[in-house]
Amino acid sequence: MNNGTATGREPAPPTRGLIVVGPGAAFGGPLLRRFAEEGFALGVLSRSSDTVARITAELAADGHDVTGAVADVTDQAAFGTATQRLAAAIGGLTVLVYNAKLSIRGTAFSVRADSMNQTLAVNVTGALTAVQAAVPLLVDRPGATVLLTVAGTRSEPAAGRFALAVGKAGLAAMGGAMAPGLAAQGVRLRTVVLDGRVGLSGPLLPEAVADHFWHAFAAPGGTAFRLAAPPRRRRGAAQLPLEV
Figure 1: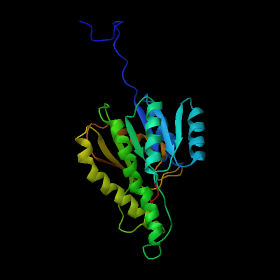
Figure 2: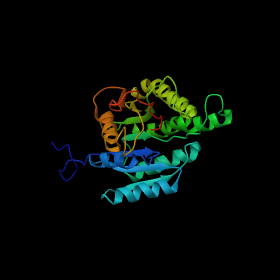
Figure 3: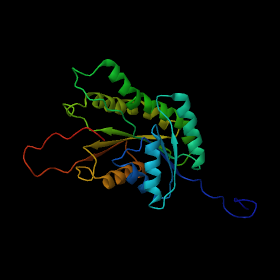
Figure 4: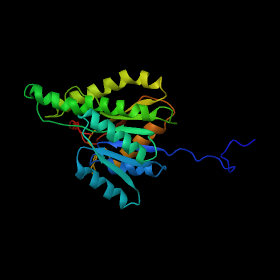
């Protein structure tokens, strides 16, 4: 009995595709490169055409093709259309990484309400838009996963990052509330907690962050994957910035 095609060959396995929404300068390239090394087809979505051009050129230099699209997460209809087209272009969606953020400086007593709403539209509501667009594309895909980039909790936000701190906390809470419903559809939702600034000078190194995202996807279980900065040797360690 032949369970393959009419030619007797087994059908080719489906392409595994990754879409990163908001591939930041700090670790967007290494993250995409890490998944490419595991055989993933790559896609990026950004509201900036410059970001898409930078990422595609950076990965092309390493021999990896990236398909990019320009879309704003605050425009639900346009973003949904762009996500569908991008997923089709890379052969199907397996992993969605939501890494978009908007940070407007201000303290709890100086940030304006309209500025707070502007940041939440990207940092929280934008993630909701991205997940809603991705879920129909993820259902029935082996290993279907949503990864949300969040920050470690702090008793006091880093200076000037109050709005971002609230947004990242809201994103983590929303992820927890969405996870059971996604699991019922066969889609895993996991939060990737980056507890510190990412950069070549650390404390979190881009390649380590990229490996951490891969681990968050590949791990057989778990819901929150925290990457902490190594302990400092000096006394009186300064508070780590909140940016991720």
